[in-house]
Amino acid sequence: MRTVVETGSTNADLLALARTGVEEGLWLRAERQTAGRGRQGRAWASPHGNLYASTLVRLRAEDPAAATLGFVAAVTLAETVAPLLPRRAQLKWPNDVLIDGAKLSGILLERADDAVVVGIGVNLAHHPDLPDRPATSLAAQGVAVGAEAFAEMLADAFARWLARWRGDGFMPIRARWLQLAHPRGTALTAQLPDGGRETGLFDGLGPDGALILRLAEGPPRAIHAADVFLV
Image 1: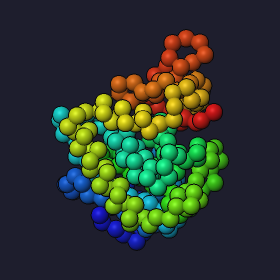
Image 2 (image 1 turned 180 degrees about the vertical axis):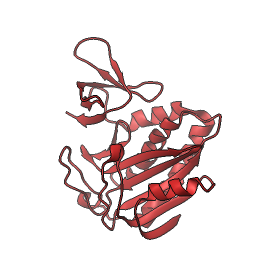
Image 3 (image 1 turned 30 degrees about the vertical axis):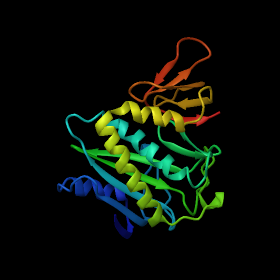
Image 4 (image 1 turned 120 degrees about the vertical axis):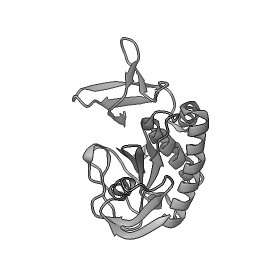
């Protein structure tokens, strides 16, 4: 685990290192970021005390689809959080960890050639006031854990699940994700990239990781890209 006091973005740093030939398995953690990013280009607030870490995966010809690494990261993170808050952490598609419905973390995958950088941010000590959804931190839930200790647990768990993804494919990852997710039948709204919205009931994951929504009318819909909200 390589740690720096401050950087713009751990993802950006690892993407740059990936282009120099850095090998798989490197983790970079920053005490603070000045240009942290979330999905769809959103800024990610980065005060001191939270986790900001990224790791590098080098894709191989026989690997499952690169996009499914987001589910590997989600399972890893949920399993790292679960012992700290038993029976309260749940996954929401595609890779948010929720505590009692409030967002605890974010995961961002970025690719450069055969390298996928997996960035993980976790609200350990602080959480933002988000305009569109509730957020929380481990501290707000009465759990005190340092970023360094949490990062080490996370890295160990990620190595185990990455090996499982490589050895057994996506299906065991999918099965574990479903075990950790909110129940089938949970009401969700998906904000689609084209501006449309779909509201339905969670009906699992497709074999490629797509969100399956059971709609009031018509067949279930497979959604591959959206912002998803609990209703």
